[in-house]
Length: 63
Image 1 (cartoon, helix red, strand yellow):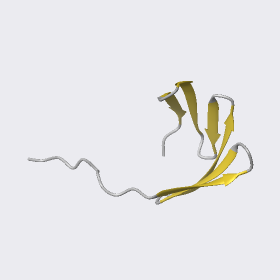
Image 2 (image 1 turned 45 degrees about the horizontal axis):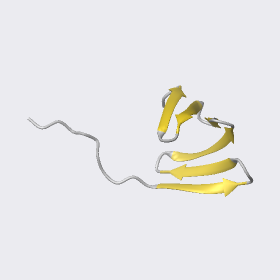
Image 3 (image 1 turned 90 degrees about the vertical axis):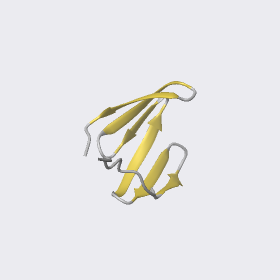
């Protein structure tokens, strides 16, 4: 039997707030993120570290 892959349409919108801040709007709600050097922190408790261009490491709690 085929498994459900959870694929489908995704809606996301990002609105800039100042130089390093953004409001992120998606189907699951809104969050605020702020970039501090190579680290981006968001209001949902997640963080993203940019290691190289195109290579990132994301950590923090999941929903």
